[in-house]
Image (cartoon, rainbow, N blue to C red; front, side, top):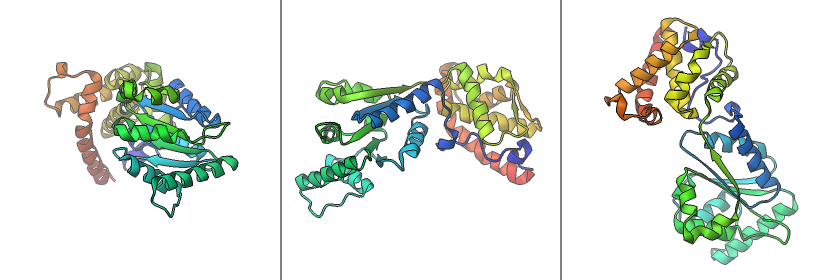
Amino acid sequence: MNILEFFGLKEDPFRLTPDPAYFFPSTGHNEALQSLNYLVEQREGFGLVSGEPGTGKTTLISVFMESWKDKAEIAMILTPRLSPEEFLMSVLDDLNVKSEKTNKNDILKAFRDFLVDRSQAGRPVIIIVDEAQNLPDETLEELRLLSNLETDKNKLLQIILMGQPEINERLRQNNFRQLNQRITVRIRLYPLSTEEALDYINYRLIKAGKGFLRMDEKLKKPIHRHSAGVPRLINILSSRAIMIAYLEGSNVVSKKHVMYAVRHLREDQEMPESRLSPYNALIYMIPAAMLLLVGYYAIVRWKG
C-alpha cells in the first residue's frame, strides 16, 4: 500500500508546483486577488505584486489568469531579462499580434490598433511580468511607454509586475519615479499567521481528499515557527512529517513527526542550528528535502 492509499488521499496535497485548485484564500491573498480584479475591471493601468519567495505570488497569478482567460487577452512574460525590443516582440507573440513591417513605429501602430479593437470588443489586454525585479532599466522604461497607449476614457493596456521585494526598491529610484507614480494597485504578500498555517494545511488536505489523515491541533505552532508561515516551506515540512507518520503506520501526524522532520532536514545541512533562523534554515533545507523525496518514492514502490 502506497502513502496515498494509506491515508485515503487522491493526490499529493503538498506538491510544490503552483496549482490554482489549491489556492488558499487567506485574508491577504484574497484581498490581493480582489485588487487585481479591480485593476482590470477599472482599467487602472499598472499593478504591482511583491513578496518573498514562497509566499504564493505564482499561485495567486495562476488563479487570476484562470478567472480572466475567457474574458481578456493575456501575455505572460516569464523571462524578464529582455531588451526593450525583445520584450515587445515577446508580448506581441503571446498576444498573437502580427505586423508585416519591422519598423518599431509601425509595430507599435499595429499593437495600438489591436488594443483599440480589443477595447471596443470589451476585452481587456493584460501583460503580466514575472520576476520583474530582474527587468533591465531600459525595459522598465519601455513598459512605462507602453502604458501611454490609451484613449480619452481609459488605459488600453493593464500591466502587472510581479516580483520579490527588491522591485519596490528599484521603483523608488529617481529614474523610475514616473513609472512608480503610475502604479495604482500595490499588493504585498506576507507569510501566513499561526492560525492560517494550520487552516492552510487542512485546506490542502481536504482538496486532496483528506481520507483518514489527521493533523494534531498542537502542530500549528511548531509548523508555523519552523516555516515562518511561508506556504512553500509549510508544504515541504508537512510533506516530510506525513511521510514519517506513514513509515510509523500512524494516520495521525503529531508534533513529534514535525520535530523529527525538522531535525532530519537540519542534520543534512551539517550546519549548527544556532546559525540558522527558522526561515533561512528551511530555505537551505530544500535540496535535502529533494533527496528525501527520492527516498520516499523508493519506499512507496517497495511497500506498493
